Image 1 (cartoon, helix red, strand yellow):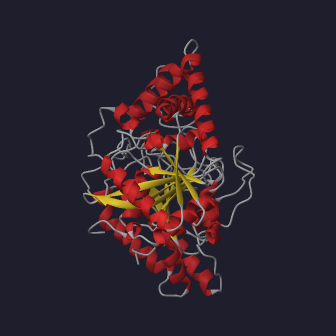
Image 2 (cartoon, rainbow, N blue to C red; image 1 turned 30 degrees about the vertical axis):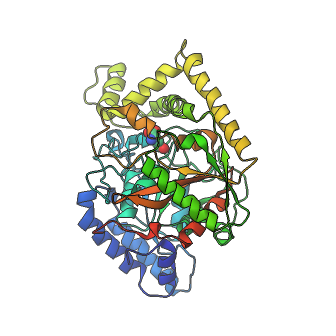
Image 3 (cartoon, rainbow, N blue to C red; image 1 turned 90 degrees about the vertical axis):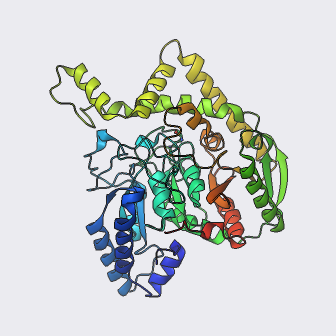
Length: 483
Ligand code: GLN
């Protein structure tokens, strides 16, 4: 059962091959067996999950047929879940129980999904290795001495290890696509504003976007269908009509024009990953796509612009964790300042502190123009690069990451080295366009991802191409040994 995709699970539940309770119990037992080694869950909803499964089974017996009824999922631990801890993998929220559900969680509950629990992540989604979590790093099931990527580390590990068929994630600079690439999964970051941010704890509000990690594009389409759309509680949520993502999967690729940015294929890229990308290009050519060389000249400035703006936004978003309004409070404060200072100092990890300091600095008088304002100008240029590239091509293809998953601990003391690993993923967040990573090969037993990027709200086209690729390859179907 645990090897099935979401679409197959949905079919099997409809055909009564097994019940939602049987499936949920089976996955809970797998979590108990494997998660002590992988550390992908922060909280497991043992009892509530079985109750949701029973309710779904009862509805199916009464004739209900909706696709996600009884389908198990798990959520990144920054989505607010009523009555269940939402920690953002931070000590400051270690005992925080949200009084409401995030819109995305509510939509899945209404669809009848079973929530197995809350998944590990980098603290407040700051990181690309999973190692900044207060609850300890998650391990990559393909090689447990390596990082699973981040910040949606637990989401990727739990899906890759077949503990849950799909999971929610969030992507502000690559946090869905990069761990998807490192774990042999398909991960989609929709257009900024496509899925409501209501109830998703803010890290860098103008980048944050919810999305999914699953085994294939078809499953991503199902999940996006259930959650995309306008939400009046999120002022940045898009009014754009929602496409039929599943119907679009079957479209042939004849006539499709895909751009290859020359800046993606330079010495930063591990040449072996370059070879994987080129084999994906060959495959897509056989399916009818045409490739066009393009240029995104501002690419080299994307990482510094992202880290300045994201840190600035983080520094203001995290001001609310002051021990008064939210978060851990220190013992016996001498006065108000002592309360703020010690509460925050005791409860934030090093990476979060580093970003609050960088962000506060970039926003301070005298430095605002030199850093924050300049980064915003670069952001606009990056957006313009994409807009003009998309006048000529339907999609852009390239690697998701420049390198393979690194060894746990190897970049912990070199944050800039870790930041530079985000080179191919942050541009989509700076521009707000959608991106998807799909498995396209293996190097030394480790999965490699290829990234597709599309114009605003063209998720359907991106899913279509990934689906057609997956009809002719089986990289997405491979499981790590032992899982
Ligand atoms: N790795 C990036 C960072 O550390 C992206 C994080 C994210 O997308 N949440 O900020």
